[in-house]
Length: 415
Picture (cartoon, one colour):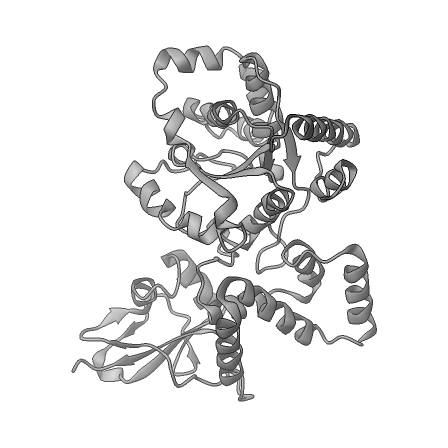
């Protein structure tokens, strides 16, 4: 078993707080907790929460999951918390406008596969899965008033996202202020020793969670705030489903493979670091090799794609994705090759291509379809479709509809 100091070094790796002293304090507190837990013969209670605002977890979520996995490997008690109650409001952190509110039915449906997705990273035998409606649902109005009395409005309004909205005249709704309060109560209900989260959770964990625990007679949890965020497929902005630059864990092997291949070369080092856990020395060697030309970016990316697909789909999924990729890009024409084994869809009547793309789940929204059309990312029989009002009729079939370089469907006349 690693020593206490070795555990602290590993568990605090990658943590950042925007303040060097805070990291020193958290490292000290974590060391103290580990020493006490060892003397008492118990494991630390560690958790991270994931709000099921959508049905997909994505590669960006695996950064905190890997930190949880490190705690598991050191023998600690890890909870994968599904935010079935907090997601009804939606975290306002880093949002420039109010989120749409979900219904309990939508949340339950979105959360249905969350644990299975998380078990791609976490050990299912060592993972406690809980939902925060267990303790947030039974709270009554008197409880909420009692909890809210521990905070001032100013503490919430100085947050960048709220202060920016105030300056720009954007509304801030009262229910949004309750999100941090509810997440803080998650720590209280679980008597947490440690909470893991991303940079957008700094206030919720360090301020709300620790303060509420202390106010209710508990020792404040140690906050492990991961310093770097995974950029999306654009290589620039933090991976986010709302921005359409994410790589879902539920993606089919070829889709996952292709999306990794679409990531800009400059993002290769951080992907290797955050997803594969490469050391600084390995990253330095990778960067040097790409800079000198010794390593071709496309080969580096293909190796990365294979490793990522293998994590979530195993060797068979990896080989199938590689084979499909080679088939699609075997020709040198502008559209690439069309695989033989693509799905078919019978079309009985005229339909707008935008609607067809949405119906076949080739895009996540009409907005994404229109954006792809403007970027020549939608093709019908290899020809770009740029008119958002364009339609397909049965008389035009058979035809191959393509989105990007990876998604195909063969449209056929009705039987």
